[in-house]
Length: 148
Image (cartoon, rainbow, N blue to C red; front, side, top):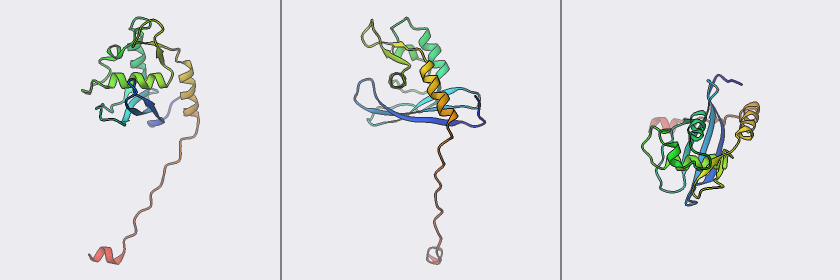
């Protein structure tokens, strides 16, 4: 499934792993058939980088971690930005999207989940028509506005 333009498939919300803030994230599909994720907003003051990261790259990094031992250290190097919060925020998004779950063997760790359900959701979003673009009305210029 390909498209000629980048398409934001989903904007979602989830709690951070600490539960101290609510994160807004986005998932998009690129022309080269890549799925990318980014943190879009944080309800708290925690800094983050809003750069897009390839889900393929994230899954490859997680596959290198020992089973049941995925932590934010497992995702180091994914982001070019300087924020130390991003790997933890990304794990919160992955948890919300069903790509990781709490580890059954180690506290404060996560384990990968079969991504097939996630990819089914992405496929359905791609097959759905894109949402309509909101049109904005141009402001009317009056003679009074021009003369002032």
